[in-house]
Structures are given as structure tokens and as C-alpha cells.
Image 1 (cartoon, rainbow, N blue to C red):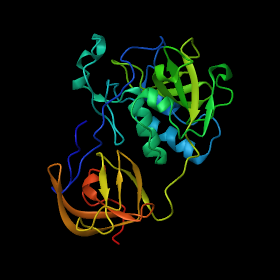
Image 2 (image 1 turned 30 degrees about the vertical axis):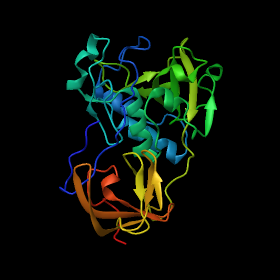
Image 3 (image 1 turned 180 degrees about the horizontal axis):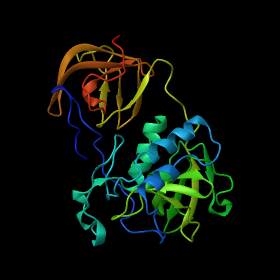
Image 4 (image 1 turned 30 degrees about the horizontal axis):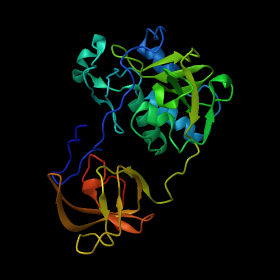
Length: 291
């Protein structure tokens, strides 16, 4: 993934993660809505659902009309993808700024509800944080808007899942389907590859007076004060959702080609992290007060 351009020179980077994406070919034939305006109007929660679930739907729907790009997309929005090795319409997706299916779902979960899903459709399908799971035999009857729909080459094996979409209700979904198409509203395809669904709404929300961010990097040190003089109070093994209470100016740190003196306090760890390792375009985090 590319790092984001920062508003200040003293800034950090994006997630260092492999882009694990859905396939660049269609799961099944179904005509997209012909008008982007009609599609946008149709993309909304189509049944009752908790506020968190509705927010996931609304975040996904905000990307209606954005191109599909294999390997494209991040927590923050569309990105340029990768050229699909199978050729076809995706052969030049490195020149297309958009989303693949897994990154659209990841974006919707994070922007809508502060839920940090892993990379890759198969990892999302097996995510341990799911609050409920539904089998293919149950169809759409027990689903609510915001649930994630799954398709796999072997529906009994979640490790084979290659496509994922967000349920809207009433048998409809929003998806980034394949190269050459746009993020669209479609009918749910209850075909031979349908592998069921999972619910992600209902997971924990940021504590009061905090704001949730994602970190990047591996083995990131957490410190007992906003500096590096004392030994680490803990470490983050990989990208992690963290709840920031406040931030201060502390010791200047240089890492990964960036310099920054801003530090954020993480109450769940009772420790500080350099803002270099907070995945946000700004060096001084927006919406976070000074300690």
C-alpha cells in the first residue's frame, strides 16, 4: 500500500499490509443499475436495524459509482489497485482508483462503526469478532442491514471465500463486484457459491471522550511517557484499532522516514504511542484534544 500524503511534514504512514482482494471476475451475471443516480438513491438500509448497522450501510453506500479496482481501497477511501494477473478488464487496474470487494467492506466497517476488519475476503469471513453467523441454508430471512454476505468456491469452507458484500435488506446488497464495473446495488445471489453471512454490528464502540484510529507497522512500542527514554510499556504486534483520549507534544521521533513530536495517550493500555504509527493523514490527529 502507498502511504498517504500528510498535511504536515512530520507525519506517519498507512497500514503496511498486503492487499488481499476478491477475484477480478464476476461471481455471477446480473445487470447493474443503469443510472448512477438511481443506484445511489436505492442504496440505503431497506429494513430496520440498529444505528451501528445502519452506519455501516451508509458508509458503503457513500461509495456508489466508485470504480472497482482489484486490490484497491483502504480504510480511508479508494486507492489505485493492482493489475489483475488473469488479464481481462482488470489487466490495468493499477491505473484505476477504486475498491475491490474486501476493501469496500473494510472501509464501510471502519468509517461507519469503527470496526477494524482484517485484510482479505477469507480472513473477513472467519473474523473472530463476528457477533452472529448465518448459514447458506438460512438464506436472507434472519439477516439485517449491515450484515456481510459471503461467496466461496467451497461454501462449506470459509477459507475459500472470494467475494463479500454488505446487505441492505429486502434481498438487496451493495458490492464492488468486478473490474470494469462501479460500486453498485445488486440483488443478493443465492447461488451454489453462497456461503452464508456474518454480523459485525454490536461490537464494542470507543469509550466516551475517545476517538478510534488504526495503527500501522509491526512490533510498535507503547511508552509510559511521551518519549523513548524509558523502556516500552507494551508493544502492538501489528495493525491495531486503538482509542485515543488526548495528544501532546513530546520527544521528537524519527522513524520510517518521518519525524514527529506528537504523542497520543491510549487509556486501554495506560501508555503512549508516537503519532507516526497512527494511520491518519494528519500528523496532529483531528478531533483529539490536547492532554
